[in-house]
Length: 483
Image 1 (tube, rainbow, N blue to C red):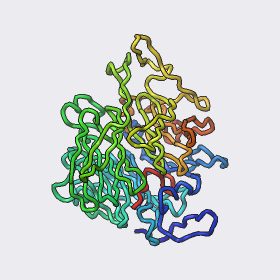
Image 2 (image 1 turned 90 degrees about the vertical axis):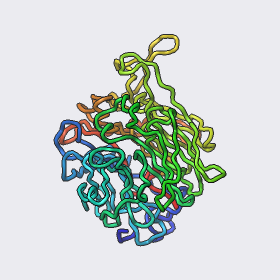
Image 3 (image 1 turned 135 degrees about the vertical axis):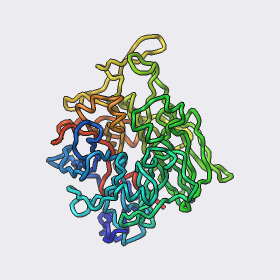
Image 4 (image 1 turned 180 degrees about the vertical axis):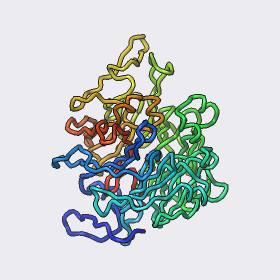
């Protein structure tokens, strides 16, 4: 663990010296309102030969620089493809006063580097602390294509890796870094690596970790090809591991209703034994849960129907559920349809029966003005109305999302992965990403675009960039795990 203490406000009753984060998810909901957000911004794959960078965006509506990029930290290398991010320490270390949420962990999906970024010295202007080189990782573990990172209560950092250095899925597994970001080895026991890698989440009270399956890097780095799915180069399984022992206990085959299971989240309440995974290609939210005999099972909880379309590469267009999250009180689930262009809010107080409560269109391939049109059962064609924000036509589709601690503000970026962006939304290569904020009604349900917030990455100093993952300095509902 890093030394130092993160001081947590005690709602005006002074301060208590605890470890990072919050004691419970519900306590986190009453934490301070976000004022900064860190965003990974990518030039890799765009044709601009500049390093990817971490942008600091001002999200304080009372600030003169609200909705502006106020700092950019370029990485020291070109061609990384920054993607997802995590922390060296989070609420899983809340009971350790010596721990501090100091370093933002930035795995580079293509180069294989992992950067540790110091956010404590100056939260508005983070600085580079350490680089873990891919040769060190490959030599000690054989792992490459790092994706999701989570901090562990032990002080280690665990990173899912999607393949070996040659892009073969057979080499995937889980990397362990110590608190100084030295390579320790693999987390899973020998012979217990999954078939494919992607995201993971652990629930220690149930001694379980579950990981999801994107595909072979050799396939997805070349763009999406439906034939690769038929060829078995993409996943459809969840992998159930004993925690913290790293033994693969069960593999759940999601079948044809669970193709490309990506983001995975347990409910935040650490006593709960269920969660959800977003299956991109089949556009289903699948619920997984523990059964009375102690094994794990799954069922489709929400299904997004494909749309019959004209002027596209296929006769039917899936929604492509690429990201989702759960509010800290486990009341609402939010997900995006990257191709259709909508963001949805569901009430999941009964996780077996989600209820749609809000929906808003913020881009997509079938918005008015696009060459692609949807066709109804009656043969009539139609397109979605997508509003302009501050005079800007919304481009791309909603992709990564982040929710405020109190659950009232949802932030949205629109880049998935540079190669896929170029394939499905080539306009992003020319004009870059943007970032939106959606107001959330947490009483009755409902979503509304905030017209006062728009971060345009088309006018960045080195040219248009692709914006992806978002993190608050104090943690959030997709980084923090409670034990």
